[in-house]
Each structure stands twice: as C-alpha cells, then as structure tokens.
Amino acid sequence: MDEPNIYQPCLNCQGGRKHLQSATLMTWLGDTLISVPNFPAWICDICGHRSYDSQALAQLSMMLNPEAGTPVQPALTPPDKKPRANTPPPS
Ligand SMILES: [Zn+2]
Image (cartoon, rainbow, N blue to C red; front, top):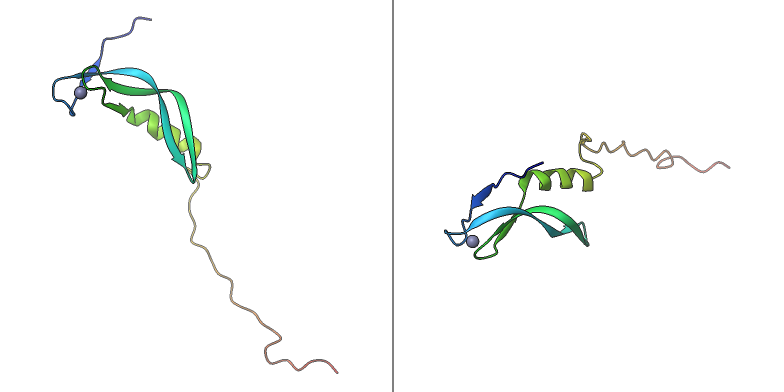
C-alpha cells in the first residue's frame, strides 16, 4: 500500500502543513481521563498544532458511549399509589 502524501493547511500558524500521524489522544470519559494510543491526528510540521481526525473522534465516541444508538425515552413516572393514605388500620 502506498501512502498518499496528503496534508491539511494549518490554520494555527497559517504556513504549516498538517500531516496525518498517530498520536495519543487524551480524553475524558465521564470522570475518568483515558488515553487512546495510535489515534489518527493531524500534526503541523511547523508549529506542532494538532487536531484529531473528526471521523475517528466520532467513531471513538460511539465506541465509548454504550448508549449510543439507543433511543432515549422520556422517563415515565408512575402515578404515586399510596393505598394506605386514608385506609384505617385493620383491627
Ligand atoms: Zn502550524
């Protein structure tokens, strides 16, 4: 497989080229900081500014969120039944 020499213009330094490389992504999963090695990232060859691949980020968030794809239903609160409210205790 030959790798196409693709790059994105760097918007940070306005002159660099960002190449797709592997980097370690640090991200928060709830309250836990996790690191994802070998994550595709665009890294500028001049200023080192990096941005992670948006498609890969979308895939990652789907993998990390077990509820992704699950339709969210509004919570139905059952009517509060308190049969003992006005019932005299059995004697
Ligand atoms: Zn740059």
